[in-house]
Image 1: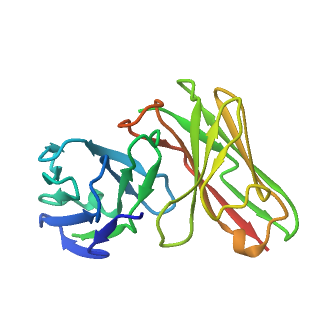
Image 2 (image 1 turned 90 degrees about the vertical axis):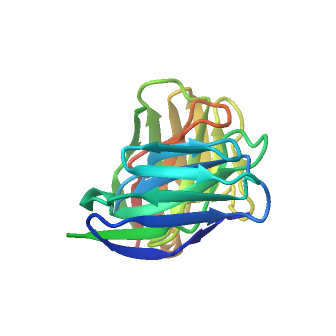
Image 3 (image 1 turned 180 degrees about the horizontal axis):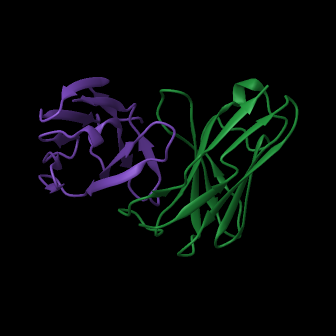
Length: 111
Length: 116
């Protein structure tokens, strides 16, 4: 079952913040976040495994709620390089790292 | 990060021909690799899981006789689109991981297939 991402698209000014959500009707084994620039391969951002977990790198962070049915990706003080399409990917239990991706969120950061 | 290469980067072919796409793991050996298809402005859809030395596992709705996968070595998986048609035009991306769950996937640069 494909996770649901929202919003579908967001336009920001450099320095503004944004939140991208990834939801599922069932508890998830894990959540992966990737960013893809046009015509390029997706690039790994982070994985969340435990309910209540939060982690981040530079000014991009993510959380996983206690029920493991929703994850949010936070873009803080956005930079032009943050532009791209963000995908969450979810694993089913015992699926051997097989990912099902959400529909994606297109982010455009303007100067 | 880990390195995955794909060849070719793009290919244009006539309807009815077959096209082979190679996916190579350039650093660690990959017993499992994944093949995705991505249509413009859409998400990545998993097509199949490629297993070294055994048959690939296809996702529901993916025709195994049309999309032939061969994982003959620990560093190479190939996807052959047989009798390609315009509706097969897409961005094909492979990925690998370190095998077990919870691990990040490393994606290849993708192959843009255009069938005329």
